[in-house]
Amino acid sequence: MGTIEGRKPRVVLVPFPYQGHITPMLQLGAILNSRGFSITVAHTEFHSPNPSEHPEFIFLPLPDNLSGCETSYINSLNGISAMNTNSLARFHDFMVEMLEMQEQHGQVACIVYDTLMHFVDEVATRLELPTVALRPNSAAYLRSQHVISQLQADNLIPLPESQLQDAIPTHHLLRFKDLPFPVNAEIPNILLDFFTSYANIRSSSAIIWNTVDMLDHESLTKLQQHYKVPIFPIGPFHKMAPIFNTSLITEDTNSISWLDKQAPNSVIYISIGSIAIMDKKELIEMAWGLANCNQPFLWVVRPSSVSGSEWIECLPEGFEEMTRERGCIVKWAPQKKVLAHPAVGGFWSHSGWNSTLESMCEGVPMICRPYFSDQVVNTRYLTHVWKVALQLENNPERRGIEKAIRTLMGDKEGKEMRQRALKMKQELELSIRRGGSSWNSLENLVEFIMSFTQQNDKGHYDP
Ligand code: UDP
Image (tube, rainbow, N blue to C red; front, side):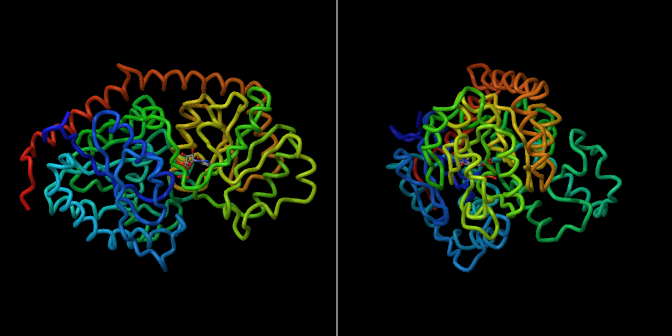
């Protein structure tokens, strides 16, 4: 492969710097690298990926000047704007240098970017380079954002409470209450602009999706009609890519040695991902729920994920003594290995998209406690479409938690969910094998990216 003598074509990746977005972008890099492309990752200094995990990639830090900006994800709108403003000039200069050096480093085929990093489009348009948008979450979620934009355009927000339980006519697997942002109150303009910007693929020639046709078929079909560019669902990326570590936080490997001592299917694994935050009351209810249900548990409590606490100092008195023999709490776990471990029988999750895919790929049924955004949409699909999970209400209390754990880990309903989860795992495995939907889509994607190099095959750059 390679249109400039002896050189592989190069794909430049620009991730949005939060765990749930960086991971799929790096996995995509590994997938494309294994299919003959050289990879450059242009990334912000904030949440910079670890280059030593990817010796075959070139890393280019972009100055983001985020000091003074709120960088917690929930308040990150300012930060997104700053990243887009501050990274543009350096990225432009870097791309110009790269185009001048194509003879030595390989022809730049295209830039793949997270649509939150929209400065990329400006640079690519100036330099006449093709771009491809990466969607790190489900197609159903993007469609749900379209629903919100349409409701707003039709002046229907705020929607009356009485309609929240109704199925959405244009997205019938969801109810209005499953939309990623509550529509029974005014939505601030800044958020509406954010939805519009995120959904906008600008001049991208295609969309790559970390999803699977069998999970998201209807939404992919609808979005194909909307965007009118080729769509490549090639997920789950973590099963298509070679295994490597993408964690921004150090993984505590004791969790695996602890799991090694537990009985098969006995452990409930708990994690709310990299950005969700809970209050102290919820942590305390979780602790009592876990203490009372007698099930072994591996619990990730991310530092600063409990508001007003550094870590687990507000756990209730008596909890440690009650659970010492059957509980393990860590700050961050090697989640994919945890979910693949035979001791893990259930996953209590915030239902982020990566966690959802990782759990389904291992056939692990779930308890969903969504906090915001796509977690709400994913939960509806997990519980009512794929039927491999049950849902905890918001602000769950200890009795509800105990009941959910007992149901998932023990009773008939839980066993049926496990059966469906195992069937889903098998179907997902088929989709990534030769001839499966994601496999075929990847073949098409490789051909598609190669077609850029043939169109632009000048062998050198004319600024
Ligand atoms: N993760 C991990 N260790 C943990 C908790 C989470 O490696 O202790 C990883 C998890 O495997 C997933 C990512 O963090 O790939 C979280 O992404 P997701 O989309 O599920 O949620 P987000 O963090 O974006 O809300």
